[in-house]
Image 1 (cartoon, helix red, strand yellow):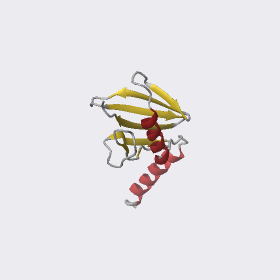
Image 2: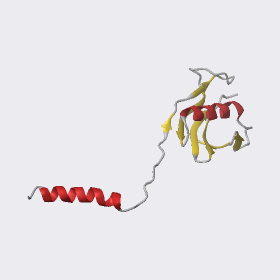
Image 3: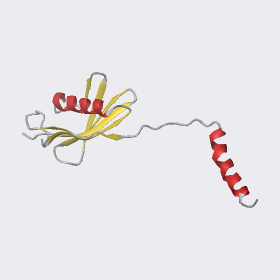
Image 4: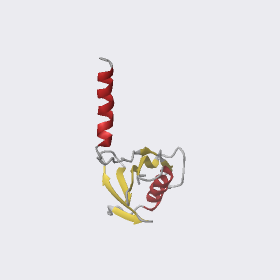
Length: 122
């Protein structure tokens, strides 16, 4: 009997929060989607030194995130622009404490793609 009381309490504690009617919220996890590498002429290169690195996706697929990052790398705005929009995605960028890199965040609806863009010099 002494063993049944603690088990009953544990079972009751496990059921009570679930039955409380509190809404559960699913948080989308960040997906790590790799890199989109380019050479200094912005041609695709698997060992290129430039392009989008550390691509992360939330609320979208990695395939979409890589397409957004690739499009950004090839069509980024001029040196004075801080935002660009294409195919419903709005990308904003900010300086990061590394030479020749900028942090980029692209949003569309609940989807978000973040990465660092490494720029060729010269």
